[in-house]
Length: 332
Image (cartoon, one colour):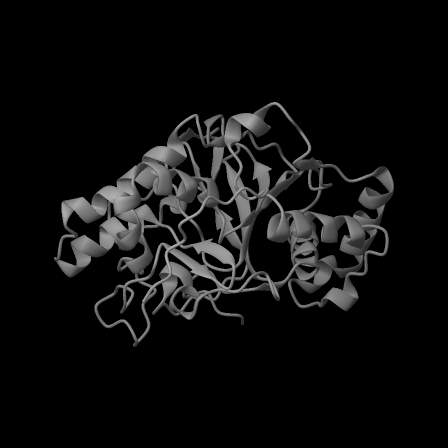
């Protein structure tokens, strides 16, 4: 029998956006000495692609700062924004080397698509967001709130949009509190879970192109609440499988989306070049507004999905998140 959490969580992970919007203690800025060290470490490995290790990217001054950022993500609010990294003016190879080196100090990167890319470009590729197998991150359309595969998602801003493209996040822990208080009848459905469309990344374990078993949205496991959420892949799975989720069950997903998007819960971030957002995929959902590109300089983010040792106890039924049955989300 599934153990449904029946009490509120009141620690730092259960935050509300308006309480943080006027503060900047979730923004971390490197010192001049750190910036110099990051540049030096990058120049030493920039010609090696992603073929280097953490030992090749030593950061004696910066490593404690990076560890503090990761602790905020894994043990605190579940997110942090690193502002002012030295990417402006760097070559593409240098930016990628810097980003990969930072990722090595936080965890192990996983593959993000069938091509085996470990470091993905998030930009508008002119695709139709409503078509099956199209990931909203490949378009300029507004996204639905979701979590990503892996324990932590890192997004590095290279170029912002001309208009729009605002990053939005919300605490899945605070939303669970709200569901418990306002819609407790929905929790059994959320703890049971849903099938997810794998958007063309299915393995032999998912012959119909969706997660072979329902993946729980929430689980309370060994004293920790964790969440897997992607409203788009839940809705797309119904199209692919030809089986509609009963309206009273889909209502629970729609209510979570509505809460996340509301001013009561969400926190907005306007990315600048050199901003790096770190999110805990088990406690924070994210999305972005639609955007218009500058034709001369398209919006571009670089993304890492990271596995982090001992981040939290995760129930086996949700360990692989909504990519259960996919060929992606695995270390190289």
